[in-house]
Length: 236
Image (cartoon, rainbow, N blue to C red; front, side, top):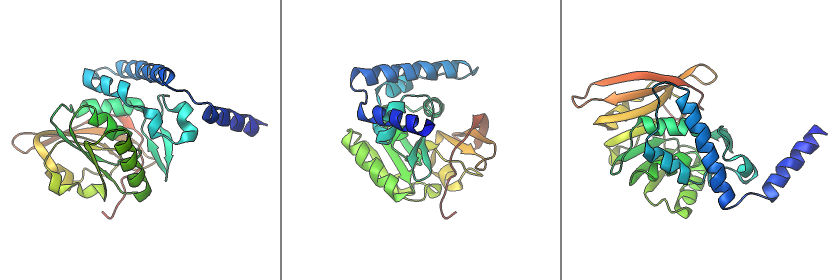
């Protein structure tokens, strides 16, 4: 009976989805929850640009149809192939930490559904995103194009090695957990640039790290907050 009730609920949510202003209201409520979460962590703030971008990007277009009704909950959601779309508060925090601004060239490792790339594309004109899972790469590229994000270039590749021919980047965002910061990404980060990356093994404690490359080429990093990400995969 419980399974029947849940199945009926999900069916009704998919058969009678919210549209237009209802989505706008849900997106605004999501951002209120994000801001409340951010405010609960001393020292964290969101820039007006990040808030505006997340108020605009239609997150419901980046989740499977059967999850449309849950798109604006402040939680991660499955997108298939063992991957997830990140929790909105994590998207907001990571985007704020790399201090993206107009004119920046940004590299994202782990396109997933394309949601994070869309948020970045609302702020700057040049976003390069790498996905290693072919169906996700194809779907994300088509989705971003259909939504008008022509300033996002998506490529099927091993993100560990970055996108050398498009480097250097003002900012790099890694949306999968690694045991260490990939040296190729450090090399492709512009002096004065910032990178956010989750470090740690799957099912173990992971921490979001902020990595900064100073003008003299030296590197510093600091631990930001515990997180949970799928692992960075590839031939490395």
